[in-house]
Length: 473
Image 1 (cartoon, rainbow, N blue to C red):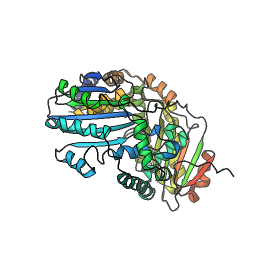
Image 2: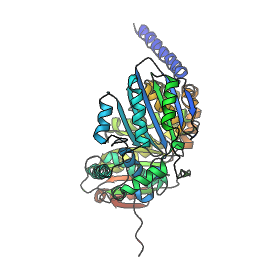
Image 3: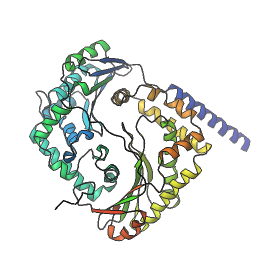
Image 4: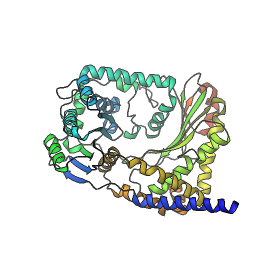
């Protein structure tokens, strides 16, 4: 009986490995048609007629990285305004035009892009293009709508300082790690920078930062390629270029040594901590091996970090490692929270797990478990036409080709323990080279956490996300 169970389990394991290999070789982007208009706009059209839907992803290069230093959140406010009326429709009429078809259409800003995403029934493809063209070529940008959005954004930040500290932690972390570098700009802005954004700033942003030369449109689903190409060309082919050049984002190297930012929230019963350094860019060649290492370390429930800090010790409800990858190296960080009285114990434990990752690396069992986990997750990101279009547009925006997706599975299957070990040494910072960002009751933890490095302190009521230089007398 026992031998039979062993055989069944072995057969199941073998089938899982074979399935993983098949997924690795089979997950590829569908064929697409690429057109570049005379003004520089790029069209990526992928037909998938199985479902009577059509999805669009329009990406404009230039997001929070183009915000002026004293106007953080400008791109984010602008993106939100694109939904608040365009063409002949005010905000309510625009929303009704989308809702009446059962469609979706939304816009957002990220660190380096502004993205508009939508899905409609195939029969409404013409309306989809019309609404998209209105948003980009004829945006309403009403001052009254700006005032409402600006006030709401400021109130969201203030509310998060009372009820959602975990959401603010990476914002403080990126701001302290990167400082005045564009990657230190909070996409959402701060209370101070948002308050200073005027209607003229929004209008200037549109003229300077938007244009056909920065636009990538990916359409996927059930449509005729020739007709869609003609519609998009007619709508966007004459759009003028942006009047300002995109800023050159300079890469930042990993930082040596330690420094600590303590954000004081009196009365806090927990300490939230973010321990990070500079990581890698989106085009990092060994990303499959890096994803395996990160999955083992802190990328899933059974990771080393979560097992030690949550499962074994009960010091937290969750601990994870985070990779932020942009056109230049972003951040790599450990993030968690713990009761105030166990602050140092939890941080020391996280540092110990990081040290063990460097010392022991990843063995074959850990590697195969992580690889199979990723292989199980990877195909779900390409299940729908909307996901396919989003991937195509993002690849074009960051100067990557389809091999970034199509070769990923094979790269996962070929990763070995020595490759993963080399990536750990190359990418993961040592425990001696970390930026510490702690959010909690400073009176109770200040003396203890000062052991981690030079300490900078700021109150959570400060309307910025990084310490401000003293004003010159």
